[in-house]
Amino acid sequence: MTESQPHTVASYDRELEQLQALIIKMGGLVEEAILNGSDALTRRDRELAEKVRAGDQAIDAIEERINDDAARTIALRAPVSGDLRVILSALKLAGALERVGDYAKNIAKRTTVLADMHPIGGSEVTLRRMARDVQVMLRDTLDAFVRRDEALARDVVMRDQDVDQMYNALFREFLTFMMEDPRQITACMHLHFIAKNIERMGDLVTNMAEQVIYLTSGKRPIDERPKSDETPFISSPD
Image (cartoon, rainbow, N blue to C red; front, side):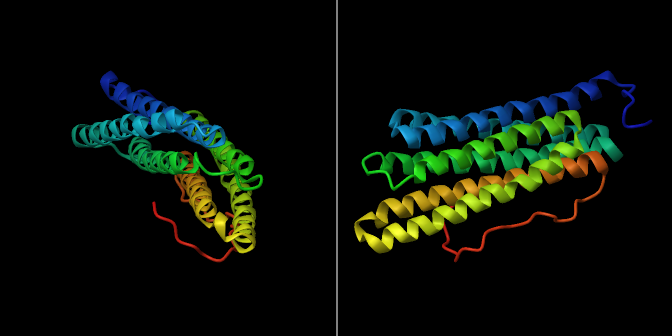
């Protein structure tokens, strides 16, 4: 049986389709969390930030269902070849989506603190752009997953350098503000952690795109990502 042929047991096909449908649903919620998180920061909107935090439960619930459904399908169907790659890819994509959702929640948490602080230069415009770029990368990765589009997945991988470059620029900007005015240190540190969370989102989405490349080609992609993070390292909590 080739990968393109339907299975003799129709319910098996439905199980695989359901797994993929859950990934798309979960991805949609994560996209919404990314955009709402950046909007909440820009607008100083505590209510929207709280919506992002509360919405993380729905994302976690879908991941649990994907894990359960995948485990059941593996146990009952003993999948091989392309079917096994689909199931394993779904598990990896779900895990990455859950972590991206956690970062969006972390951004919302810091937004409630920043709501009473003055903006730092044009940083929030850049943060919004970073978040938007990551959201589009995620959307395209999900499209590549559905369409089995290796070329689109590879394009997403290359776009991660743009997010890294924006993070580097913000890092230097925050350092400058903190050195010039120590009163800005608290706000700059919160904004730096938000920037780092978005940069990590970009890395996770890139990992997802690489998983799609593996799903479509059966080969692990060579790490071709041109990383641009040359700033001194400051650790940030997950």
